[in-house]
Length: 172
Image 1: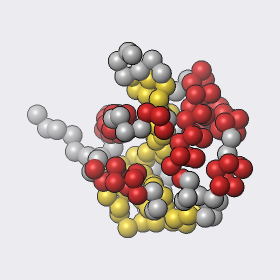
Image 2: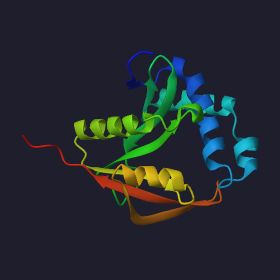
Image 3: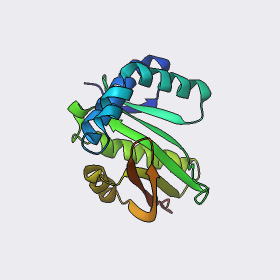
Image 4: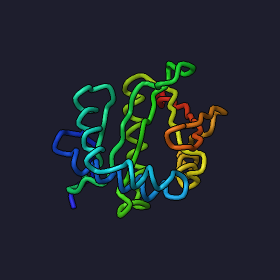
C-alpha cells in the first residue's frame, strides 16, 4: 500500500468511481430510497456517463482517495444555494463499502476543508438525507451541524437536511 493521496479525479478513475458511487448508494440508502431507484435506475454505466460529463464540464472539482487503490471520491464546489453564496459545498462523498470505517472519510473531509480554506472560504455546507443517521453522526463528529434548512427530493422521495461548519484559519 502506498501513502494515501487525495488528488483530482481523471478520466482513468471514472470506471472505479462509478463502481464506488453505485455500491455506496445501494449500501447506504437501502431502506431510505426505493429499491426501484437503487437497483432499477442506478447502474455503473449511467454513473460512468455522469462522471464523464462532470469531468467534461468542469463545474465541480472531483477528487479521489488513492493509496494504490481508489477507495473513495468526493465532489466539491461553491455552494449551490442562493441563501449561502459565500459557502463552499461538499456535493458528495462516497467510500467503497469494503473500505468504510477505516478513516478514509475523515481524511477526505480534512482535505475538503483544507481546499476550501485555500480558496478563501470559511463557511462550509453539505446536504445529507435526513434518515441517513450514520452519515449524520459522522458529520456531527467532524464539527458540522444542521442549520435548520431542509428540502424534499422528489426523485428520491426523501428529505435532506443541510449541515454547515465555519472554519477559521489558525493565526500565527
